[in-house]
Amino acid sequence: QVQLVESGGGLVQPGGSLRLSCAASGSIFSINRMGWYRQAPGKQRELVADITSGGRTNVVDSVKGRFTISRDYAKNTVYLQMNSLKPEDTAVYSCNAAITLKNGGHLYTADYWGQGTQVTVSS
Image (tube, rainbow, N blue to C red; front, side):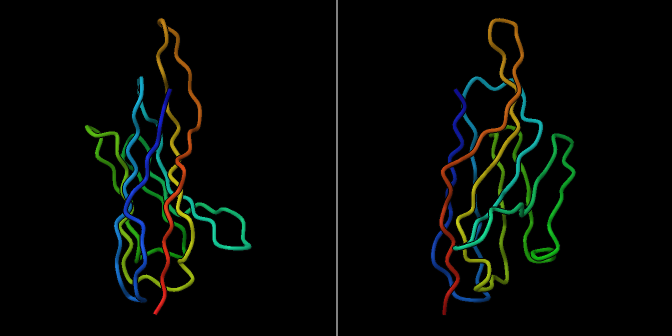
């Protein structure tokens, strides 16, 4: 089974920074894509940023220039560096990954989710 574990959330003041980490573990053959989503109170979950196996990144306009996504291939870990945080960034941030597993010579690809980590930006 695949498990995604996030860390790095917390309470910060406006203008502060946090770095979120998400580590994938299990019988992983390959990770095709990893990304970060967030869900604020009363709102739908939305994509924040993602990164492909080739290292190409995508960041939504609302956080562009403030957030950076990166990946450590050796550690099966994705990071989200968040700078210049605003109160509207307050949300539960969840890691998502498209992962291929190899079982008895068969390959299976599916999306996996972490439990989420709380980010609160408040003065």
